[in-house]
Length: 404
Ligand code: TXA
Ligand code: MG
Image 1 (cartoon, rainbow, N blue to C red):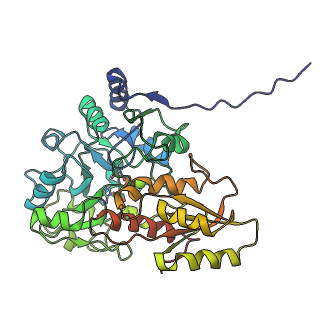
Image 2: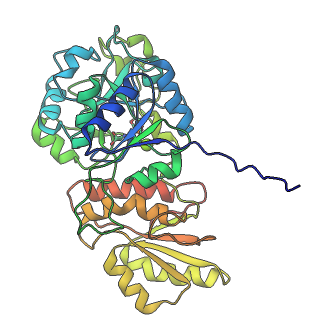
Image 3: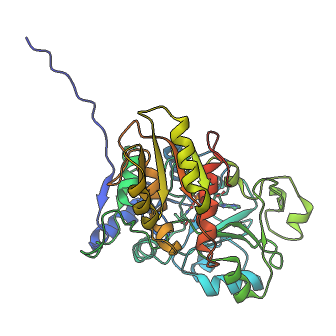
């Protein structure tokens, strides 16, 4: 008698197609009923849960392996939803009103005082007295939020510590057997290149703390720059230092009244997510300026014994130049075009994932022993600075190096 070996059954997430109206309706219904659903936004894919439903929000933390003290951003369909959903006190302060009027819908998250009577699961805000709110501009995210009519708590749809997902394949790679469903992006034009990320910006939203309206703080840089924010609001924005983690506020100020931040300095980290390891591929990342790139590659080739290879993450033009010089021991992953920081942002996370053996540009295992990444020159548009912020985090992971 032959023994039948039983294959393990993996449970895959449902797939819904954004161009099918009924599918968007099904995804919205699933969200409303407490299921967790990934969906595209103009930054990165989010993993959504009904923000009033504690069990759904708990599922998000579990699926991602996310520490419970790292709060989630609440996504709503439009600014006008703030009144109905009662997340924060209205009217907004002058600065919060100016930046949200200018940049919503779009890649901006604003942290505001949480209303004492907000109907949000406490897990969403990790017990903080504040709530991060975003109105995305992506047509699929907009349709989903409108159809659901609820506040949707959504972190990026990746496992904690992995690069954020900019394609449906990235979401599936990290979470297929851990979530209820994935709503696809809209079909892409036939001339789009395979390795192009589908997200418009490719990096996460700018996060701004407006809990004290006239002293706003940028907690996470993104496509909307400090200059953009200052221009539309007339206020000056501080930039949060992730390492000192100042500007804390305490949960006893839940109503958001008074000088919460000043009263409770150091009580609770203001930007809890900043302390965790982020965006790191398995191999250590060394971030180098253009004039130090070749020397670093050469030095690494001397240090590493064959068959170890050196990975390089750089713009297409630099990769083409490197291929003329180096043999098979240097493997380049092209990431955007030289001088075009938006294209670098769009391809950044797919590029980092390629070093872990994922996607059309995958470097086969065992992969690169070290990754030398090209630093971006500051183009002054906010996106280059935001890309550098992500690259620095990838490079400062435990096994990583420093910028020189
Ligand atoms: O573009 C984005 O923002 C994407 C898409 C899906 O919307 N979302 C995203 O979420 O990047 P996540 O969870 O990966 O990052 C949210 C960041 C974390 O660093 C978190 O600590 C911070 O925002 N955050 C959320 N609520 C906060 C709050 N009340 N106070 C301070 N920081 C907060
Ligand atoms: Mg994230």
